[in-house]
Amino acid sequence: MKHGKKYIENAKLYDKATLYDPIDALELSVKTATAKFDETIEAHIRLGVDSRHADQQVRGAVVLPNGTGKNVRVAVFAKGDDAKAAEAAGADVVGAEDLVQRIQGEGWMEFDVAVATPNMMGLVGRLGKLLGPRGSMPSPKAGTVTPNVAQAVTDAKAGKIEYRLDKTNIIHCPIGKASFGKEKLNENFTTLLDAIIKAKPAAAKGQYIRSCVVASTMGPGIRINPSKVGSAAQG
Image (cartoon, rainbow, N blue to C red; front, side, top):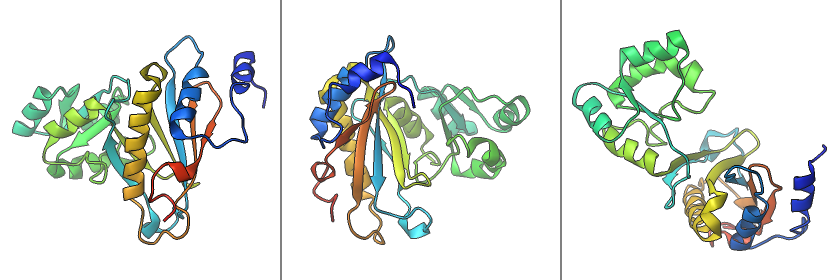
């Protein structure tokens, strides 16, 4: 794979063989974010579990203390007082059958997070093939199927992110923008890792946090020492 001149120059700023402390890795990820836009910093965490087994799934959601730096667009499936509460909380679009039809019939997808009240899931279930692949299907585990839609909207706008394993047992999550600086990014990173560690399945054996890498959108991956991300990581 060929890399551009900036990537090659940025790669000289760190040692590929070194496992850095989180704060140092995040500082390096900020330094290597040299694009003309405010790059997103992402964390990629490989876990010692097997996602093929139901009792080893790791999935949940957490509100990052400093947000993600992104303007999150929230769609809410609700009726009556719940719809009014969602609108008052700042939802970008609220609807029921009309919203389902808009997504099914027009292919409208101008939102980042979908929230639904439990009594709407029979209707929203029709959208599984459309919302599932893009990770937007409301889920109780992610807190996006809830009777308190107003709180769900507030949390999403404040920087709530969902984490879950992919097929290779890795969790990929944004933890902020390069402009946040290392301290705020570290607060977000620590919050995310704490949530993932608390979500450790009882069936998981051996080392839980196998590896961890942080990287800016256009920059190289900086490796973090997994023993430095929480006392429960090796349990």
